Amino acid sequence: SAAMMIQCRERLRTELDNVVDFWLKYSHDNVHGGFFTCIGKDGKVYDELKYVWLQGRQVWMYCRLYRTMDRFHKPEILEAAKAGGAFLRKFARVPGTSSGQWKCAFCLTRDGKAVKIQRTIFSECFYIMAMDELSRVTGDEDMQLEAEEMMKQLIYWVQKDSSGLGRPQLPGDIPINSMAVPMMLLCLVQQLVEGRGQEVVQKYRELGNWCVQQILQHIQRNGTAILENVSPEGSELPGCLGRLQNPGHALEAGWFLLQFSAESGDEELQRTAIDKFVELPYQYGWDKEHGGLFYFLDVDGHCPTQLEWSMKLWWPHCEALIAILMAYSQTKRPELLERFSQVYEYTFSHFPDAKSGEWFGYLTQEGRVALDLKGGPFKGFFHVPRCLYMCERILDDLLATKDSAI
Image (tube, rainbow, N blue to C red):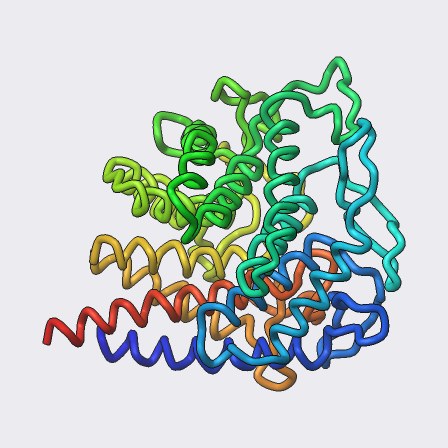
């Protein structure tokens, strides 16, 4: 297995270098700042709209690579991150519906005019991630403060009063605990406390625990299913909404929980994360006929109403690779390494584009390329490089301990 790990790591390294090169080459807007994300198969920009959450993700990813990997500690990566951060700070925030509150636009024109605002928290989440990570490489305390301020507002929206999101409360619209929200907040908690003093850790500890409890509510049907949406009290909801499963999302939640359990030394949480959020979604999500992970499923076997339910998308496979490899690194259970190998084989034989670089994101159920774009409103410089980066680092650690054991 050491030989297999070395081979995997080399492929991941090469792939990460190629993906970074692709975005450095094609996505930078040297006229207005920020990044293009609507990038075609061969690197041509097919739409100049700039999606704020993807801008934030790209800033975060550049900074993370620059800060933690020697080979990416390059001036052009730092400059790109700073330029993206400046564009975000200048244009992303727009006055919210409640006085004194800021929202982040979902989408901007090329020169930074707001086009659309979503009544969700996700643009703000990635604004926070970008600012916090950028503050770590630039030493700019104002940015870190800005991240903390926005985080405070986010917590208020999620836990106290969501009216600032601008979504009217309709009589038939029941409250929902959607897994995306506590997951995203947990991700932000981990971002904000990483490497910072005990005071910051204390400040977010309660929120971290709350997020974990909210995520665990999604274990349903006596532990046999992870459902995407449950009631705030943690019971199953009626209809398609209540039966929805998103295997990729459950796997991503799995590695967030594994990170949290490793930091807090919570062995029970580690077991739950592996059994329910790594093993389970892999088992029900894997397409036994064509390989790969389904995008959406219905827990009762009805046909999901999402048109793309049976497609194979890039990001669930990225999240599966991280989750399964992290679970293996924490437990050394050989069957987890076999699963990693299976997902790895499928992913690397279907998504990367050997000819023009980067990865295709959208395949048919059979594994053929359905959309040949490399970036769009939802696919940017994030899931692929984060996966390659994290898996490379986990394999580095595994191989280092193997070497020291020999």
